[in-house]
Picture 1: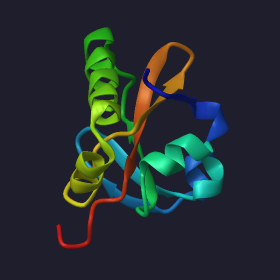
Picture 2: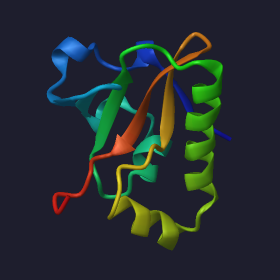
Picture 3: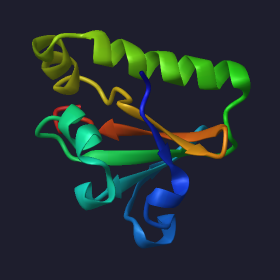
Picture 4: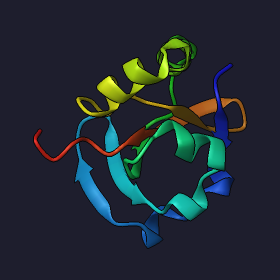
Amino acid sequence: MTTDIPRSALPDTGSLTVLGTGGEGSVYALPTTAVPPQVVALAGEHKLVYKEFRTPDSPERARHHRAVVDVFRKFGSEQQQWLRDRAAWPVATVVDGSAVVGVLMPVIPEMF
């Protein structure tokens, strides 16, 4: 059920605006034109960001990230909207081959 987006389908990070960098990786603003429409729809009215991990996920972390994406998809539309308004919850995983290298998330609401 998880949507895997090939890393090669996204713009090079050098062309994206860096929104933040932390221990796990960097977060970039992502134009919606660079993302499949079904993923844009999952973000609702929120813009999307790409969180690129410093290192690819271990198999255990990859399962975790895919499970988090799958949980979001199981929620009803009202639950999804509630969560989008309060958190940057992953809606897709980004893969390089079989490795999970990042996630796509709605941008965190400004109040946070």
